[in-house]
Length: 224
Ligand code: SF4
Image 1: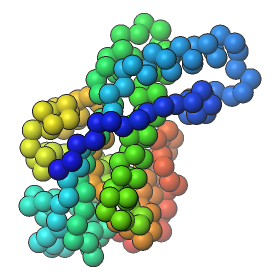
Image 2 (image 1 turned 90 degrees about the horizontal axis):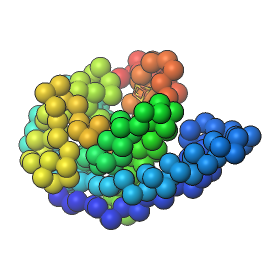
Image 3 (image 1 turned 120 degrees about the vertical axis):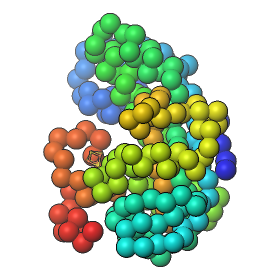
């Protein structure tokens, strides 16, 4: 198991503006607000990642063991069909930024801070991806998370977290009784090598999702 804590997170004004979908013609006061929130968030983001190398065993039609823990998902089973080694992980932005966002009376500021936390999570995810590729000499890798598809329900967070033991102590992330993560600006999942990049979004028909990372592909969904 490896914990990564010195993860550099630096946003440019342009990157945040684009992420928040604010156009070039923004008012001077909007510009000042974004700058203020970038400065504010810089001291509140506490990026951390933990991952483990885990072996894939005991494959059946719809179940498989990862790190000696059984998971049930047809899509995961198919994606890991030819693999023996994968990388379960948890990443987090920490609690301070979301606490600050919740304490904001101004709803626009609250929304912007929440989105900045999401962008920080994207940065941590990319950092971990690059780290794994470099360290283990991997080509392309993809990830799946419990709860992202009906096929792999959020209840399997329990199994995923059990791979790490005391995740609260290790990285400051725990699960509620309904399997949501605290801090909520956290992501858990399993990275795996793949020839063709896979996104769960390709199998998800949900409309209007602002987090969508790839278009819905009904033909691919049918194959699974
Ligand atoms: S489209 Fe949205 S809800 Fe569906 S898998 Fe992607 S991020 Fe999740």
